[in-house]
Image (cartoon, rainbow, N blue to C red):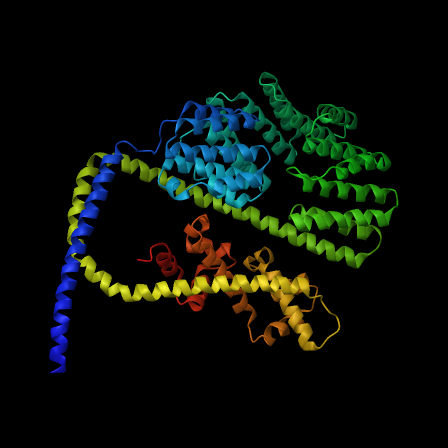
Length: 621
């Protein structure tokens, strides 16, 4: 009897459930039809996402691509707000403003401006997405995030929305490749860039490209070709006068004549540069000239004459782009000059200062450490010299790896772009047949919708479990953040004691180890090992291993834990483009050498594989 009563109670519920499901099927069907008809009505009007620009925005873009007219471009952008602009115009104005601010040297402000752009709205419009990736690539380039910059810029080069923008983007791609010693690909991008600028009538931009090409030829020791391109750059800038760009052409002449050991010509151009900037407020130009003047004297072994120029650089507050790099070089040059004057203590002090700045700014670390190694070698401190030389080589190897990563990214992206071009051509050929295809899809979806509710019911329990796991793992990440903050405070408050019990020393060493891991996300290094970390912490490998074991932890499990947490952070941050990477690329990004190892570690730690985690994070329904 109890079971019969139960059935009686369940039956009305079942009937109500069926009615609800039928209603949901109908709603779903109407929803699908509405979306498809909406898409059909919009497809003829927004094939490429472009829209009409107000005159002030058009002028701002024109001024931006005239090189060094960024302040005027920003003034024009302010006018767009007075004409009740559309949502698309507002978004594009924000994007162009971030680019102009970046080129005025305010990279942090530019980054903040771009972060305020509604990326969800941008992603729905291919024209806005083109400009967004252009801005993102430019800002990342100026902030020395070259691999990320490359990834953003290559997404723009096949779009064809604006010849000037593509010309600039290819110039940046060329500079990234050249900086990583991929000269062949760099020259290919640069020649394409000049072609775009020529088509757009931007003579000054072509001249600037000539200057960059001259630098390439100097780097490859083809000095006659370098000289010819410098002459072409100078001639182009005479047609479209630009004091700042002419200044940098003269700086390149200095480098050229130094390679020819023509010190008088080099000095002549250096003094010409100094006369252009001595009365200006541009500290970037001044420090560059001072370092060059000092470098020329140093090349001639005139150490006493060189030192005042380097001191001029060091007297200038580093509040401009490239400032820390110039200060590092000034300290390095000072150490060389003082060593020539047999002032070894002062020389070592400047060499150490260069290393300290390089370590904080993560710039020119190989050069700074190599210089310090040479200074110690000159004072016969061979052990210290060997130690710093070894560190310098590690930085050089890291730079070589980054170079190969950029090259690999290029070839992968190039293949992807070729596939995309082919697909676009196929879509154009089938455009006339699309309407019939849409109606066919509607019919199929109506049939599928009948089974949708049943399928959802079967999946709901599993989805709920997945969502709970996602929430749990995100909660763990937040807890880890709080723990990390507490650890930072603990480390800042507690002085490292050389006296204490073994347990206390082990605890201190473990705390330092965790701090090192979390600082700069060192756990993402693919070649990380106990030996490397022990060396960074200036301790013994066995002591470090024992400190980890005392916590009943395994080194590999601990590193994997941090890497998986980094993966979760990336996947859960919708503004982080890496969250859309394939898992093989994401695995390498966070330090794993293979995607299979990454997937196994991810599932072991979270209970989900990465695909399940991302799916339930983006679409938890």
